[in-house]
Image (cartoon, rainbow, N blue to C red; front, side, top):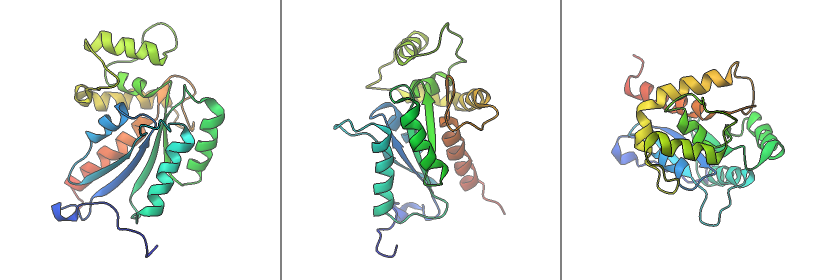
Length: 207
């Protein structure tokens, strides 16, 4: 432990007590852009995204978290999250990662079918016919927003709907005991709820 590098916070800018969220994402564009929006002087977000070599399978997402842990000293209150889609990998691969998460190595936020479902929940409940797919979600986002480009996501358009998304996702997850969504849903609400709570505590500390 003593040989590890200190955690990567710029302590010269009043972040000595900042909460650290290390988020490994399957996606290379949309998820990193979304979570970047939660950075603040009191909540430091370190994003470990899929790079150009396209190592996006769940085991690679989790390996990025492990590599980060090996390299950096983490504090007791720091949180590590793996953000993964269900549709590309299925239950066998997700189950293996979920078992490791349940053992306490990190937290897991699975979206089913994909991260775009979490984004849609910022806009509305899913009321369209049929089970959502990645293609139907992208089409729905383009129709509702007027434009949507996965490679160039304008995530600022969703920030006003964060509380609605948390509420809708939590309702779909009730009673909240599943390790991943068993139908259309997203556990990203757990991560975002924690991000927002930490920011609120940092802004209004207990006296």
